Length: 317
Ligand SMILES: C[S@@+](CC[C@H](N)C(=O)[O-])C[C@H]1O[C@@H](n2cnc3c(N)ncnc32)[C@H](O)[C@@H]1O
Image (cartoon, rainbow, N blue to C red; front, side, top):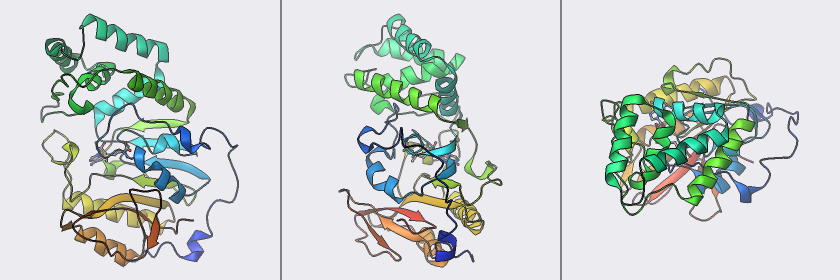
């Protein structure tokens, strides 16, 4: 791999024009939170991540959008949210196209007619069976509200199979407020939701004013979406290598890139990633539990902890 990105020549190619009025995105205290409790969701890391991102973005691509926590809090002219979980993207497209009152009416009507509560497992199972037959995307949201840990989990036949979240999960006020703010936000943005495998998405139009954020499953940790047993592609060394080479290619075209990942986790290290960072001379920012952070070109962390990083092909300012 030859791309040497992040040097001063490339950095000077940032878009110069200020395309945006100060508005929606200025107040860090009012980040919009996804109504979906996504494993690996980056909401809590936003205060550390957003200052590391470029300004004046034309197209922002959230290649593994999950709960969309990152994209909805970034200022850009245009947004592409992608995830290979088709049913999730169907839900977002409903949020995008439907009137907010109709969405709330559907959800609340389902809760009443299936008598959903913290204890009614039969009602939950009935709605789950209906969803698995009819695939009404808003029913997926209702199920997630009442399911164990609010997780989205499908079996290999694409049947939603997350169990009931007895005594814990319901469509509470916080979730309702997050949902309303989320819908209001995406309906304001110039955005598109796409369901594609990351390596099939057409990124050929992207240029140096564009920014691709990648938050893939982590090779050395476990998530329900990366074990390959859920009817969707798993995450193995093959996917990891393919993603890294796509990033290298985009970098050669001066598209700005940021990749979230962990370099070390519970005694494991991601050798492929470490080698790729070295070869490409990318920038690594180690993220902290606190809001402070620091930049390194090379990594040096205790391999028994978790070293969560943001890797960029530009030097964050
Ligand atoms: C860590 S989550 C993203 C979380 C998101 N950044 C947030 O803050 O909510 C990773 C996402 O990648 C998606 N994914 C996994 N494999 C994929 C693939 N091969 N192509 C596209 N998306 C994939 C999963 O469905 C999951 O939603």
